[in-house]
Amino acid sequence: MAKQEHNIIPRARNSVRKWMKEQSLPYKELISYYTCAMMEVETRFRVLDEDFSIKYDRNPIETIKTRIKSFDSIMDKLSRNSYPLTVESIENNLNDVAGVRVICSFQSDVYQLAEAFLSQDGVQLLVRKDYISNPKPSGYRSLHLVVAVPIFLHDHKKLMKVEVQFRTLAMDWWASVEHTIRYKKDVELSEQAAKELFECAEMSDALDRRMEYINSLARKK
Ligand code: 0O2
Image 1: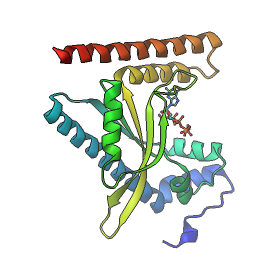
Image 2 (image 1 turned 135 degrees about the horizontal axis):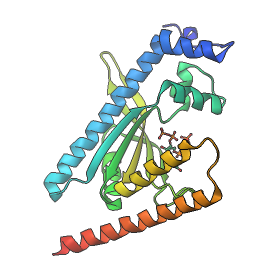
Image 3 (image 1 turned 90 degrees about the vertical axis):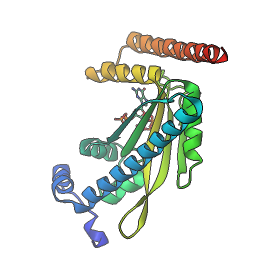
Image 4 (image 1 turned 180 degrees about the vertical axis):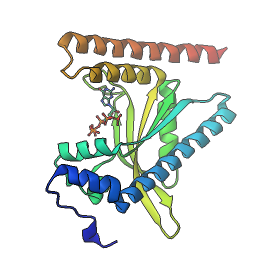
């Protein structure tokens, strides 16, 4: 495919959406590469979970969730940041088209899994944001990594970006409920509601720490 065919100079946003969604083979190809990279990362975590379960007699991962960002969310994010609405621009400018969420029992599992994953061959760390050590003003906690991983196609290898979010069950529960509350309303959250949500995040963090402590007591026996 010639390079200029990837570039679109839209007159109207709707025509771009139609072009990308229905006509664009490069778009479909790119999404399939992200899907492969997401599967690659998911498998690496399933292997780690299996290995930890043999060594420590316990599975550190509760759940793994995966998602590919929807076409509409991709378009919204490109537009919001004034990036070109092209297939190349998606690959160059967005880090979170492929997302893997690893939900763990304990905060220590989060860091242990992240370090084990990052030390693997082929995993290249691009961005690390530790919202567990430094929670967001909303109270949001999670460890975010953007990595590049290789996918092996029939005639070449390609590096694809994947965003991995690590959370405990409590962090994930808070983020899911907060998301529901925040996005149910079209208007900004009231100061009172935001304050209450922040306090709930602190409470769930306290619960996480207490569970970790109880686990250490139980393992001493
Ligand atoms: P989705 O559907 O979960 O992907 P940006 O990615 O451009 O928004 P930045 O700074 O690169 O900005 O990303 P950031 O803030 O490090 O991580 C963004 C993602 O983290 C969000 O993705 C959420 O998944 C999650 N997140 C960040 N802050 C909050 C928060 O206060 N509450 C909740 N519930 N989730 C949060 P998306 O794109 O919003 O959605």
